Image 1 (cartoon, rainbow, N blue to C red):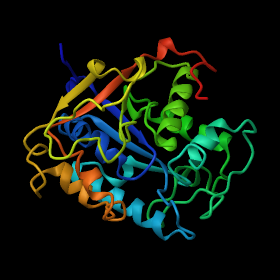
Image 2: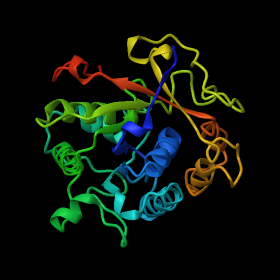
Image 3: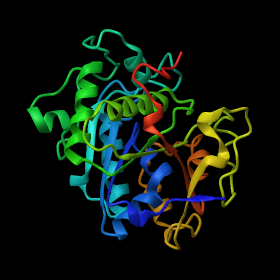
Image 4: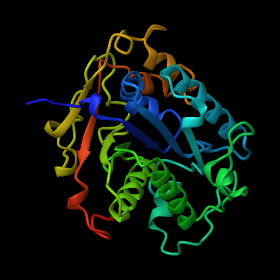
Length: 294
């Protein structure tokens, strides 16, 4: 039996993703439905998407594009939070968040070519600066504290983040950060869902282009990503009308001009489908220090 997400049960949604555009790829339809149901939606961007840039220009552009894209879905600037950390690459050995997650010295500064301090934009400072009026050093402890504080302030009933089987190191590590924080909190835990962006089939093969539905990635998987365990959200008319201005998901994606490089357009537009898919995470099955990646 196909599992469906009941959006009317979601009153306070928090979407936590690594890079600007991931929130659109994974959850634009879910965000829109919760907004239409008069629910609360907040979106957290863990990094500034500034991969390969030696100044702040790329990060500034991606943050502003994120705000414009989410405004199309009905999320205003006050509901968007930039943590302001670095984006340094996709592979585990390059990924900022993965290296941070594996770092044993929680106070070690992990600088990127762009910065060693969190930053936002003039009209929207990063979360740490909003709280303390100073930028945070790039340390594991600061990242955990910032994200945990934000979750505790918002107290969502539902969280969506990236999947642990995603081959992008930032996506994989963010799942572990979110999971560990939720295991650690004492108040009522939200329901956690995860969404897949970069599958082990490779970005050139998945998602399949021009299909209205997501198909199973062709690779050997395990119990963490069973296709039959996915939850489906069928998108409404304003979201499933193809690649046109009348499709709000597509329109929001087009605001991410920096991400829509020529070699990435086909991949990103492949997420414009008649559905979104998620996996429900059972937090009770996790213990601290278990299921840590190799």
